[in-house]
Image (tube, rainbow, N blue to C red; front, top):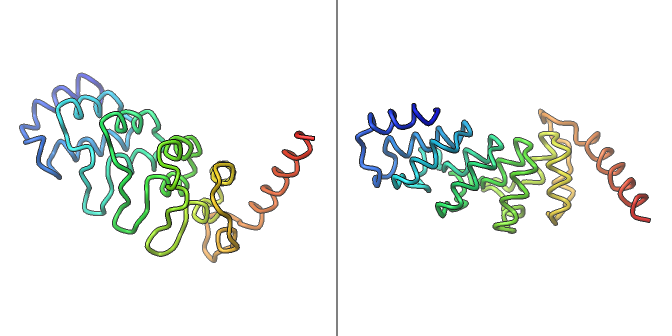
Amino acid sequence: YGRTTAIQLLADLRADLHKPRNDASRHLHDAAMNGHVDTGTLLLQLRADVDAQDNAGRTACWDAAGRGHDRVIRALITARASFIANNHGATPAYVAAQEGHPGVIRLLTSLKPDLITTATKAGWTPLAISVQQGHLEATKTLILLGAPITVQDLRQYAGARGDARQLRADLQAWATDALVQRY
């Protein structure tokens, strides 16, 4: 949505912006998912529920994190968004790790450090999903931010999108380079 379209959209909504799961909340999710800061900000100024959850338990912050929209997340945080996990226990930091967005991981962790250690209901941590998806930069970011590393986190899983063995080799090379540059 562009700004002009957003104003027309709001005029068409005729919804009670204070009711959870109303049209305004759905449009806030859409704006967050698509990186439309102006539309999201406008909806928030009109008091759309910043923490409204969809049927899967996702919030606008969760949607923005999954798409790597850090500017939208900043606007949501200004509106006092919470870092609510979805129905499976996946936090916004988890989905950012899953989709490979290191900048979003850094932003969320700067605001709530325990997000990098929060596991889903199935026991998956942001580090484990980042490795499983083969996201080297997100994995390095999580390690640098202090995510605890376990054997389970660095395991190769059947059907994984990424190659954990190659990622482990890349991490080892990265750590070696960092040590050589330091000394």
